[in-house]
Every structure is written in structure tokens, then in C-alpha cells.
Image (cartoon, rainbow, N blue to C red):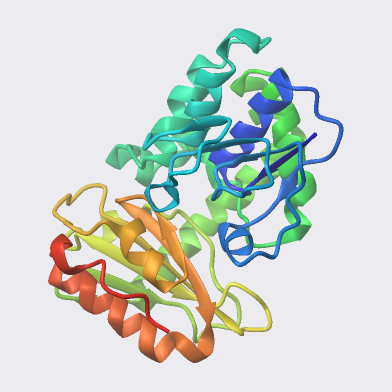
Length: 304
């Protein structure tokens, strides 16, 4: 039996809970949603998929993304909810060996971007928020760290986790990166009416940092778009879209819209990846739909 999930905070918490409830005899398989959607992941009988699209070969499935709704009967739990980890927690509640209630409350808030301005500006004051920022799915070389967090979350409280040497080192790196990221956001973000567009494609390396910071820096924006090359070969383009968590006047179902551009997500946030040859067609189409700010016409035909 194997856990298949994605390398973000919600996915890591999912893995911790499933390990606690089930007899898992293989390492976690860490994958991105686009890999699964494009059939590039070998899903086997007995696999438990969490926080990812459904696959017919899996034995149990948990997810909460609007764009991943299916009509097929399955074992597990799907619901439009703040986090996939919350669904895993509900499903296994009677089988878990520890009290994860506080962890789930915090995961729900973080994955649903239900944060205060102070938490966004000063994440170092909030342990769960800061911990979540140490996780990036950008490089497979971080896999040992994802596995470490799964083990720590299974066995320790947040204070003990934050005192771990590797976690503390990552937190220090995050604090420094967030300071630099603010400078990058200021330089590479433009406003198109009520849409903030951050385009990092001209940079040799895509900067990482506090994904909520853009909403505090550009308060007039109701939705943000972040464009980058996610891989070193620069053949794929990544577009991340999110409703402002402070200026809540975006009417777009982001996950449903991005399903037309090889992606998906939630009503309020999502992402897509596509070959760079499609960028001149896809990116203007995404921006035009966001600028319309009308949900009724967003779910047009899939672009070829």
C-alpha cells in the first residue's frame, strides 16, 4: 500500500494522517497534479491518492478541488472543503492514534488562504504559517524534507517540530527569501485594471516567497496571476491564479476556468502548466477571462 500525494502543506498533512491510520509499506509517491492528469504516473492497486485528481486504479481517494469532481463511485471522500487533510481526518477519525484537531484547523486556514494581514506580513510570528512556507514542490531534491515533515507531524507538537534542526534552518531561509521576494514582486508585477500580473519568465531563476504577500502589496487587485518557468529546461510555463484574500470581489471560478488550460484548482485559486509554445495563446485568454470578471462566460471551450 502506497500514499500518492502532492508536495504542499495540505498533501504532507494528508500523508501524516494516512500513515497513522493505515499500514503503509512503501515511501510516499510525491507528484504534481499535472503529472497525474497527463497519465505520467503509474498508479497501482492499493494506492491511496490524496489532494490530487482521481485515478481509476487507486483503492482510496481523497480530494477537495472543484476541478476534480467526478461521477464515478469510489472509496474515500470528496467534498468541496478547506483542505483535503480535513477530509482524511474525518474519514479516519476513529483510527487515528493522536489528536490532530489543531493541526487540521490550521491546515484548513492555510490551504483556504483564510489568513489575517498580520499573518501575511509577519509569518514568523505564527508557527504553522511559517512551517507551511518551508514547503515547495519546485524541486524533487526536497523530497527528504517532505518525508521528514510527515514523520514529525505524526509524532510531535508544533513547538517540537519548529525546534528540529532542519526545520529551523528552512524557516530561517524562508524569512530571508520573503524579504527578497517583496523586492521581486515590486519590480516584476504590473496592474491590468483589477488584475495583478507577476511575470518572472525573464529571470534565470524563479524567486520563491510568501504567496500571499502580493495581496498586501497590491490592495487594488481582486485577483493575482503569477507566470514563471517551473523547470530548468524552460519548456513548460506555469501560471498560478488566486483571488485576493483581502479584496474579495473576484467573480471567477478559477479552478473551473483553468481546467480549460491544462490545469485546475479551487473556485478561489488554481494553477496550470503547459508547453511554452502555447503561452502566446493561453496567457492572453486567461487574462481576458479574468478581466471580464464574469463567471457566466468563463467556462468556454478548451483551447487546443
